[in-house]
Image 1 (cartoon, rainbow, N blue to C red):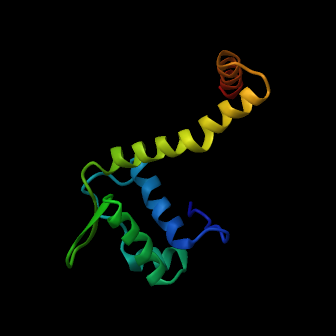
Image 2: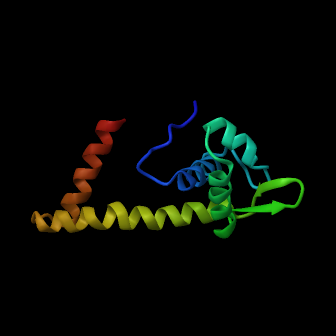
Length: 124
């Protein structure tokens, strides 16, 4: 199923996120060829220059590389780099604010952990 692009975020960033998600989820493995600019622009019905900007951001972050005349490929180590980057982001976006809000509400760390464990049991 084709992900729906969000009008509130730059499309080139969303294209980069989609490719990174494919790497993390194992749909694109190290050494695999990334869909071409034409394929992505046709699939999402967006400007090829926008796709190029998204792919270039992945090149700049060292997740993919260009082979002249052949296309773009997932770089060795990209999976681990993306996971590490996202774990840092997860910590700053979710974990630290969770702990800070818990403390504002008078909770200690053990109480916060217990609440998380209770919610995890509800998810399963």
